[in-house]
Figure 1 (cartoon, one colour):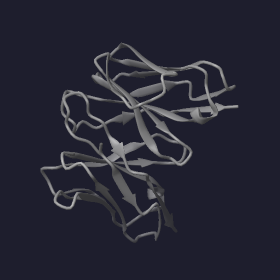
Figure 2 (cartoon, chains in turn brown, blue; figure 1 turned 90 degrees about the vertical axis):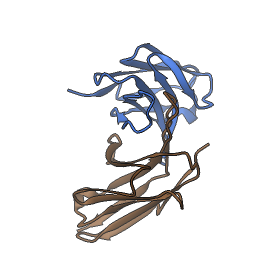
Figure 3 (cartoon, chains in turn cyan, purple; figure 1 turned 90 degrees about the horizontal axis):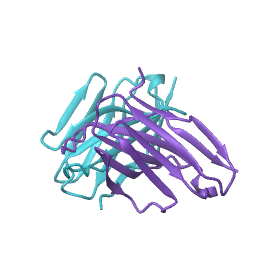
Length: 114
Length: 115
């Protein structure tokens, strides 16, 4: 089955600096890679996703890059703000006609230092 | 309007009891999921249903029995609760039309504590 590794497990950055979180996956058939943000005591919320037919996607301060050859993808947050503090999860899945299964990474606790 | 709603939000009970968690989605999605998030925040899928049919069963103990009366509802019944069942259980849904790139929307979670 799919295995997703995520690094680092914790990350502290100064407000205004950039943060990068990296994930690798094992199943070369995986073709969908979402990122979720989970604030303390809240539900995971999708912040950005990328499909295997593109290498990069950007949404304001958030960007995701995908390297299919190396089987890794990364989340980039620029101009970080205190409200970016949360746990971030990467995930991977592949189309299986109704049997889609998201395999999550182990999470990165991001702390923005004011 | 809450898209994916779970009840109860908190559940505190004794070891050995039986309990149920309910989930409803009003997004018109075909697929619903149960995830378990343990104390280390690791999110792991337990079950998924597509149009009331069980699709994924991730080697969960048979004390856990999901039921989907219709595609908008997915309930989780747990028998003979054990200490290790303490976790946050999240329900989620997605369009699930056979394409994997359909975002999953999560409910607010049910925090289960076993005494």
